[in-house]
Amino acid sequence: MSPTIRETLAEAERRVPRLEAELLLAHALACERSHLLAWPENRLKDAELARFQALLAERVRGVPVAYLLGRREFWSLELEVSPATLVPRPETETLVERALARIPADRPCRVLDAGTGSGAIALAIASERPRAQIFALDRSREALAVAARNRDRLGLHNLALIQGDWLAAIAPDSLDLLVANPPYVAESDPHLQQGDLPHEPRAALVAGPDGLDALRVLLPQAASRLRPGSHVLIEHGHDQAENAARLARRAGLGDIRLHRDPAGLPRVLEARRPS
Image (cartoon, rainbow, N blue to C red; front, side, top):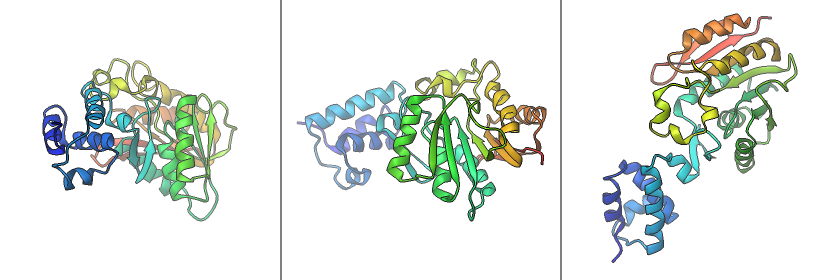
């Protein structure tokens, strides 16, 4: 006799956290989590149990839950994610908050999200600022395909996609705001071998020996692609604030501010191109 929902979750909870077990089982059953709570004595069909056990085995192996579900919520938007993209993190919403503070709601504005991945940041901004013209740029064709599907499903057509290597294809003096969550992990960081990180795209995580290589490229490019008086907002590691500010000053940017995430950690560099 096949196990009940209650029995299946109790067994799975010995291997993964309860919430993860519920999310994976709901996905295997093609139902909402509320169904599991409402009908705990229902028995699984053999095919359903096999699907769940396959998902559970992948999670135990370290594959992120978001990849197994194929989706992740960010800024109240349900986004498709895949192994071609990073899994959006809650702390990155700090970057969106600071961007919205810089984007007028009542007139057009040209905003670029560099290294967009799944499109999370660009789509969040597009949903809040429909009069803005948003560009989402990534080097990865596979990531841009995910971002395009997210855009089309959400109907956020004030967003255009660009394939390119950082800002090389962007015209000088053309942006009112640049936002980015670039790679910022040092290549020797032991966290790369822990948790979900081994399964996420390394090129979207690692930025050279000290984790600052992407900033060394992006900040000087920002200084010429922004219109005079416009701002750049870049997410960085919680221990990189001073180095990020130093690189911004070296690039000729001023009015430097550092913004903290909900955990109180320095997370976002803000700087302005002088007028």
